[in-house]
Length: 168
Image (cartoon, rainbow, N blue to C red; front, side):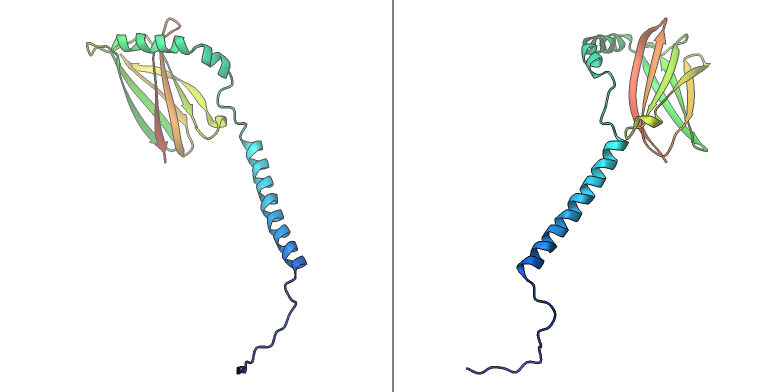
């Protein structure tokens, strides 16, 4: 057997079991620390509550089904138009009955929901601008939004629709 000559000279500290243990404990300690900090921030900024009155909402489910059936029997057609101008989003809706005639005399409202957090949600009244045409506007930040329109007559909901759109 011949031994080849090499210019390698071992140096530095050897990797011992104690050093390996400290490296592994340090690595996982940093990972767990970062996870703890991120979980704390997440819990402080989002409560996890999707509905403040989930129990009552669940009990009212059959009423919602009946209202949807009544809405379908009306045969109304609602067209939504959206315009953005200088950070203000304007929603204009045209309401027509099953014969194509404008439906007037409604109390209309527009609810804007920001899916990521409730702190940007807002409700605005939609004022009549012509027979069967209602309009409302609100300043909305960029992002995906849900808009829910409600049309009421005499305190009774006649029509409800929910749509999503992107504000740029």
